[in-house]
Image 1 (cartoon, helix red, strand yellow):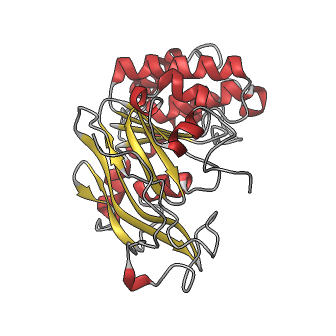
Image 2: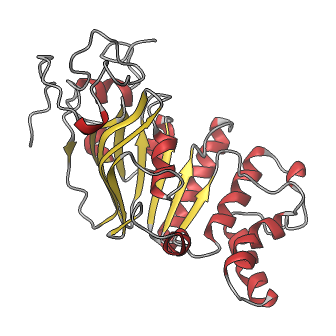
Length: 302
């Protein structure tokens, strides 16, 4: 096992993309003081073996908006047939990472591979086909306000397939039964609770039988009981369908309930990644502080 002690802050910071400029002189990183010569002394970058094939690989990913660099040499492999979670403090680039994976943003440097194929190198037609592999659950469910639950769930099938309405009905009703909304097909989004909207969004994310399902803070806005119930639902559906599930969150309860694999993101890079039980027992001071919600450690109040 690699040495988990932080590297000394000796100024030995290696630029991940020297052609894009130098830290402090040409760009800044959120949470990094101008006096810090090496902001990554806690980042061992250790990748513990997850025991499976990688469905998604992120390689030396750099993304900058103006002078602010959000992702800075990020490397990560997300295993197939497991539930992975990317955890980290607010503002560390978790949602930006998701947008790169589905090709909504393009890296300034580096690469993103989905099932071995480079997303930035895809043509528009290839990107359109690749996105059919994905289901995406947004924070609030992102339902169309003018459509009832059935039509919201059927929307991807009507847009991306030539299935008959009878076939669509069978698929939609099956997915709505899975998420406990079989009796809510005619309800409009404004008639649903927050938890019901998320479950409807989950059903819609599943109708194309995606190989990869991504959840952007699915626990946001839910009380602890409904968060636990949603986690239970995610675990049950994954056990039935398999595939690569990626959950973006900073909720430790969600991580303990459903994560098989965890990656901790801070300052635009992965601090450590690996099986969840190993990460929760990590000797890395930052990982231990964050995953155990401790007040003492490298992470302080900004």
